[in-house]
Image (tube, rainbow, N blue to C red; front, side):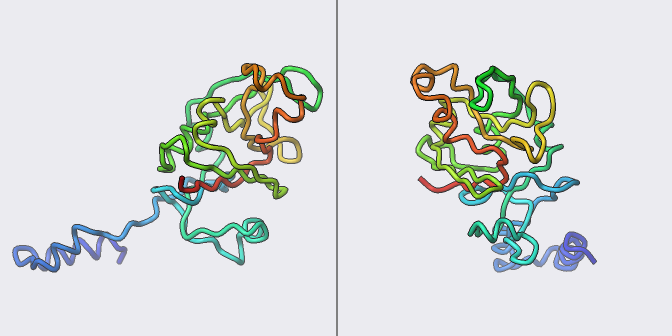
Length: 203
């Protein structure tokens, strides 16, 4: 018998004779993970969030997370399909690899964090981690200011694994004078490609 059927049967048995103790239990049910979407997770969000659709890190199966010293008791995961369902925007950015403008497309990172139930304070710290272990911290205020996206496409094509993807936390530095004043490679120091994990820190 599944949990919901069991609870329904129990409620029928005690109908009309609910005690204060039972009432207190009903007021504070244990939170359960939400169902995960079909398909493999491409992005895992953990830390100071209020939503989850998976349990704790599994030291057997979550080898990359384990090797990069990631720890969590629950997390919010997104598949490629989940990301494509989110409202997407396009930004044009001159990339450091060829010095040419390219069109990047994906959902706003701030909106993605909101779906995970992250804090909304500008001072909230967010750690962006790439599959090669590169990690960089960005404040939620800067994520909003510079309009970071989680890019899923470049020039109309999905970003491949082995390239800059499949996900890239990035913004368009061309739009901000303080960023265009920097050398081209330095503009992307806080933009890890191959993004696979985000840790939301309190702050």
